[in-house]
Image (cartoon, rainbow, N blue to C red; front, side, top):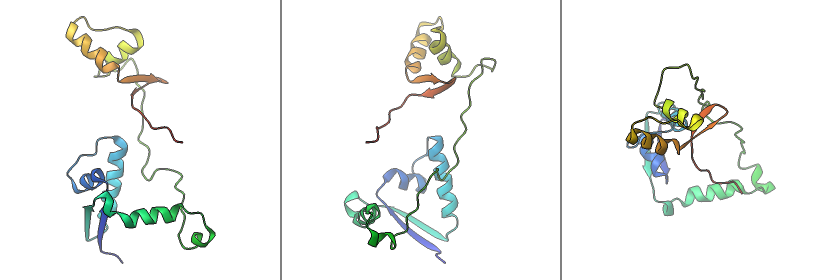
Length: 150
């Protein structure tokens, strides 16, 4: 049984999050961090080291090998297709109008009805914040960008 583990990664954010130098901010990232911490707890000692991208030849070669579909390699390298995330989906709730006001209430009011507070600076702040959000199927989402898959 393996008791001590050395892990080498060229992902600075992953190394620093697991080693405690960076916080995990997004809900999905937090779930993955907790999942990794549970796995790490099974070992006596785990060292996670950051290595430069240029010195990561071993992982690059393994990734290339895994992408080949040649019959000679299929028996050597196990193939596992992951059909769902390793961590559970976080729940997304919708906001009801009868709830107590939150920081989202003025943003929702502006997006839905165009209403703003009377105070000039507060109205400007709400307009600025609201530009970062969209309502989809009754749920307030923060806008983001995604790279299309080719």
